[in-house]
Image 1 (cartoon, rainbow, N blue to C red):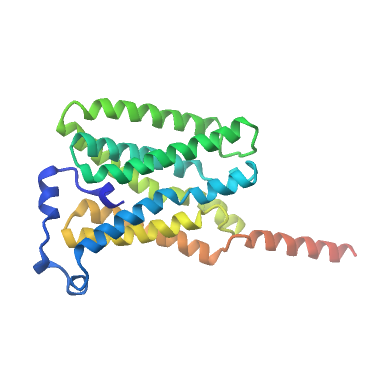
Image 2: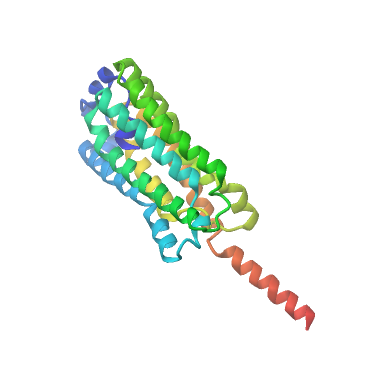
Length: 259
């Protein structure tokens, strides 16, 4: 997202950052390119902070709502931000560092907070041993990739290519609950704020990709835009709490038959 998906080639990156207004689409030429860059950067920060809404719900419920937090999303966010931070530091590409460093700190806090509730006995089937293993692997790979990127610029570029793949996986992570959403006909497990911020964030950076003719920015964020639209569509078709309403109706029907 944003500078998170800027090409790993330092030469082509600098070329893509040169503004070529004559080649911009007429519709986009009405708005300064810098607007989309700054707005996208701000939106990226809000995207990384958006899981805080669910974290607050977990805190208020003393861990009872932990099962609604998707661990895959947080683990991929942590790994995504760590990779882009490493890439930005060792390529180097300074603009990539601040936003991803914020995401790295935020996702680390989210994971530590959720695991602290698991250790205190919170019931959450998705926060299991496999999830613990995935968290540990992400942390270890973070250290490994740091050492690897320090070796050469080419190694840092390779880290950037891996980061692009992980970024797409991060955008798709909320859909890991798709089967349950369709089965229960409820989008309760989809984080609405995060999905909305993903859509807005990817929309802005897709425009930046078009303006700068940068395929890495365009492809990564265009896919994220589509995935965000699918998630918002599911929330519109299957509103959160709909399954509870259906269960209540079934219960009332059974009670009336009993009477």
